[in-house]
Length: 431
Image: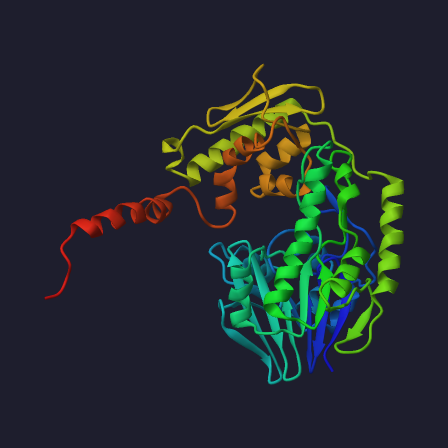
């Protein structure tokens, strides 16, 4: 009988036949530059991977793909596990897993079923180059794991329903997982949280699952700079009650270590009480992460290296509209202006406020600005002003996914605009 064993957050093991498929196992530590931590401790440890046959990663965010947890698996155990990942341009995850000595790292072709055993097959869809969803099918059950895929319109949900009609089990994100306003923007965060419930509603209407597993939100904002986000987060028990009472579906809420054979009776309230207890403890203890001091010289060196790197990989960058942003540092109130010319102090009005170690991380890590957007360790000076900062880092973010401002980008974005009017001018082919 097919069953789930719960790992944590977005991680679980699907068991059927000889398959033990682990999905997105983040088990320990902080994520997104010390911005997130797990609400509840994991019960699964590296030695337990001995029973795992496959690992699937939805995308490279560290709450789904955790290099530290993968390195903790014994080499001889890794050598017996096959990794599954969606097709990407950069091949970064596949290369990493091969180098780490996993048995095999298989890229799943988009929208094509892949047979794991005679009774178990999977269908992966690269929802974007940054994310994917997975359907797991057996003769008795179909499970659809949407993880972080933004399925927020009926049209998008219907696209999935056409590929995976009426799954028995739907796993979907239940609370916001990114910056959601400045400290005073309480109404904005509440609306953001309610929007996640609206997503679950439209997904259920299009997909008609019998069971709904709320997941991928069992975290709290753990840093002194983002801790205020926790007050408006959706609580797992409230979401399960919404699924049961408002949507007429069967909620399945699991705590780390729980096992649920699909179809068996399950009381979601038990796990809800345990998550509530853990969450309240986290809030009572307060932020466990603090900003770290940064040497101004290190910040300048990182800025120079960042600019050298993106200019080299993005030859068309100088021809694009001027990109720059002004940052005010939480640490001492200094204002730093960043542009393609470099980093300098300024008296200009800031676009965004953050700590020096957040700026350093954004400059050093190819995914640094993306991590900042998720961990919420910043504030805007006025609505939308942070976009100037993130536009400046857009090239680095594209490079991190195998793209860039180069000839391929030019052909894709500009060529289409030129070809369309030219077609109107050219004579029609044929007689």
